[in-house]
Image 1 (tube, rainbow, N blue to C red):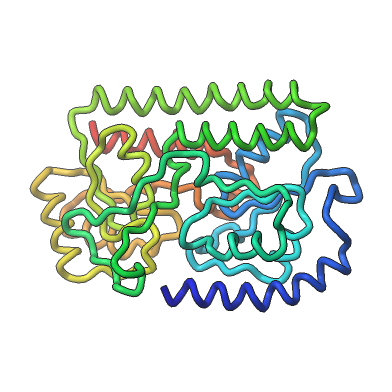
Image 2: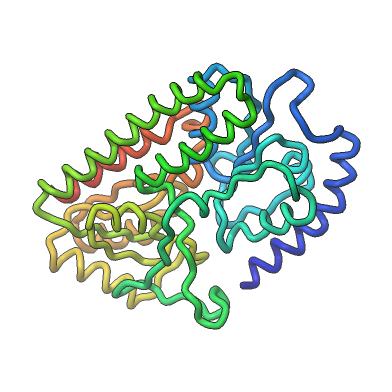
Length: 321
């Protein structure tokens, strides 16, 4: 829990500075250029909001708090971030332990303003410690309580529920464009349903059902939705990057015993663990993207959630075939 207290302490200082900055920058409401101001905490929600605004033809200034290519779990809001959140028309965040700072900020400076907490839009799952996984440190969980997995968007039908919630907010902010918003939402909705159908087809037709992640595992919602088993080095929100000899040995043995040809790692990973497993087993290392954040290249090319997930599903299909 130390990292949480550090974030809250940093937020307290940022609030004091940010309040002053917000006063200099002006009050809430639409930007001077008429654009809606939207602030998001992860790439998945940033992209869904961006797609909605572009397809509906609504002028928006959408801010992603994470720097492209940056480590999302180490994020702490700066005074400039706090100021942006305080002055925006809509603040979209996920919820959960790593975003406790957001709840505190809302309570102290955005009460009564428009905030969208994505945890309220879907059914939640706890992180789980599967066989062979590096055990969590005691300080990571208060009194041994299970932690909710925050990566809710990794299941396409969850992303669809999040999209519906974003659409509702757009229509309330711009009621004159409600029909355009619904049309844009319906187009993205169909693409998300197509992803769900593809994942179900993979689950039903592939002979194998086990995935191995030599990294953190932020895909609990995805594997739970389609009945895939998994083994991983760490839970999704773990701060660890180095696996113990026991964890590494377990993953190597599992790959060998089940004749697994593909070992996954995440974007922005050092790949040390996946490289070690692949060197010992001859398996191929393949990246899956969590959509928590993306590279600078993908951010500037506006690579959409649907494209990223389609690539993920193609890699999963190959691994399970």
